[in-house]
Structure formats: structure tokens, C-alpha cells
Amino acid sequence: MANLPARPASAAVSAFLKQVESLPAVRAGTHRPGRLIFAIDATASRQPSWDRACAVQADMFQAAAAHGGLAVQLAYYRGFGEFAATPFLTDGRDLARRMSGVSCLGGHTQIGRVLAHAETETAREKVAALVFVGDAVEEEADALCHAAGRLGLRGTPAFVFQEGEDPVATGVLRQVAKLSGGAHRRLDGGSAAALRDWLNAVAVFAAGGRAALARLQASPARTLAAQLPAPPR
Image 1: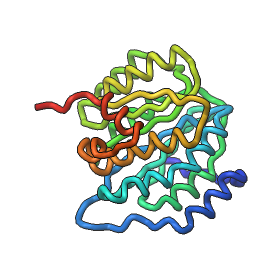
Image 2 (image 1 turned 60 degrees about the vertical axis):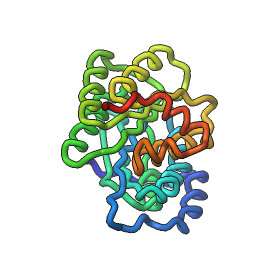
Image 3 (image 1 turned 90 degrees about the horizontal axis):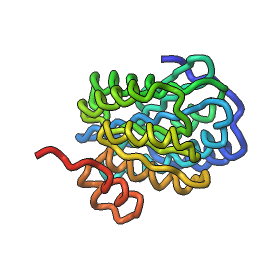
């Protein structure tokens, strides 16, 4: 795994880092935190999207705290074939600092690599959910669908949050989510609040499963729960 490079944080990220200083780390207990991979397209002009994700990620830990806690691995791709992933982290402050050290670089999408990485990780130790945030697909659809199906067989659903209105990306990403046993949602308007609400719902699912998600009254949780396939009997 590549080390995450350092860069000066944006003003929005710097303000957020001060905010999360008071956020407590998840304490170890008898229940192991749910493991979640948080993967983001970090190519070209996606820096604003990256900063939005940085500004809301700590809420995932808070949302999951009552359901056993959360361990998040940040993964991203950018540039010429660059792919990096952190260890699984249980402290929102640590994840925020690592995210603030990343800048976006032009390059092609590597969604297949994200899916393969998630499969490798869940083969080592169960990953409860994969989150992917992106806006484009430049890879062969059948290969991505096959990789998503393999991930689904391992019981790791992909929750795909699509920014933008690319109809080709919508078709492929929707299939990826479905074949993995997850859900697809298009984000409108680049709202950090909307992304936060969806990520919180996935965090609760990763920490507490379907039952915890079903108990949430918020609209994003109900929408995600409705998209999930029925559990096997």
C-alpha cells in the first residue's frame, strides 16, 4: 500500500480538523468495530468533492458508535495508475488528517482495482461494506460487473454514490451496486450535507447490520434499506 502524500490543507479542511479534535476515538470492547472501506475517485477536478468527503467523514464514526463502532480504511486512485489505502482506522481525527494530505491528479478511473482490493481485504477479515464516491466510469463494464459479483459472493455490498449526471456511469455503477448486494445513489448538487446523511446510514449498516439500519428513521436509511436485496433464508 502506498503512503499518503502530504499537502497543505484547504481552508475548509483546516476548519474541520479543529472541529474533530474533540471527537473521541472508538474504544475497543467485546464487539469488534464494523470494517468499512471508504474509496474515492481522486482524479482531475475532483478536489472539491474530496474536501466535501473530508468534511463529513467524522460523522460516520459518531453514527456508528451506538452500534458497536467503526473501523474505516481510506482508499483512492489518481494520476497514472496510482492507488493507495490506509490501515483500518477507528479515530475520525486520524482519518481526517490523512485525507487532508491528498490532492487530486488527472488520470483514468480504477474502479476495478477498488473492487479487487475490497475483495482481498474481506478475504483476510470480513469487510461489512464498501463505499465508493465517484462520477465517471472509463473501464470495461463487464469486467466491473464480474468483480462486483465476486464481492457480493463474499458478502461485502458496495454502496455507490455517484456525483454528476453521466448516463453511462449511472448504468454501470448501478449494476456494480446491485451485483455486489449493495445500493446506488446519485448525489445532486454536490451537497456535503447530503453526502454526510448517506454515509451515516452506511456506517450504521457496517457497524450494526440490517437490523440497525432498519431502526433508523432518517430518509436516507430507509432508502438504502429498500434497495438492499432480501437476505437469504
